[in-house]
Amino acid sequence: MKREPWYLIDNNVHEMFKFRSLAALKRYAKEHDMRIKRSPIDDHCFYTESYVILPTGYLD
Image 1 (tube, rainbow, N blue to C red):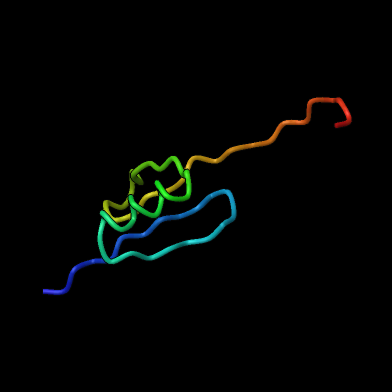
Image 2 (cartoon, rainbow, N blue to C red):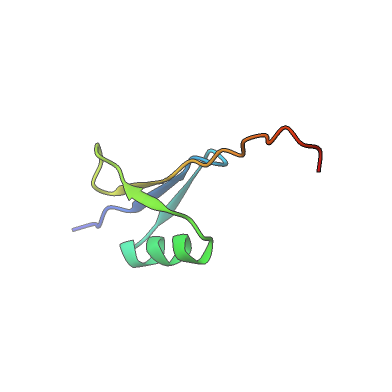
């Protein structure tokens, strides 16, 4: 029986990564400071929380 791969969708850079195991996916997310959530549609898919840099109105 072939195992299904695990997917991570990075919403901030619009990329999709493929992993052989859930542990590898979580390790990658932790190393890259990503907050991840499990997809409500697919059990083998996770996605990152989007972040937005809001303008402050001041010139830095």
